[in-house]
Length: 80
Image (cartoon, helix red, strand yellow):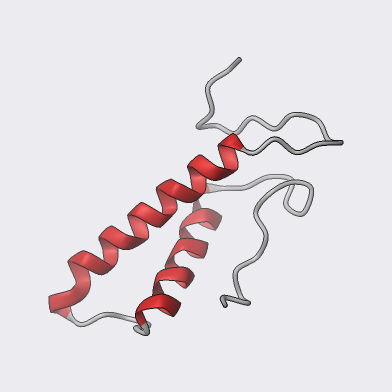
């Protein structure tokens, strides 16, 4: 669906920054909504969707356990 969104989990991407996650979320919301830049009356809901997808993506990446590689703990993860 969103071919321009790169894989953000190790080992494909050893270090993921918040900017990478937000860029992927923005691409996803653009694709799903069909808007590259929403009109003023849709800006708030568009931005809320980007924020929600960003948060869900961070939660997913922080929770993934990748077998066969060292445990990855992001800056937003709790230490075990």
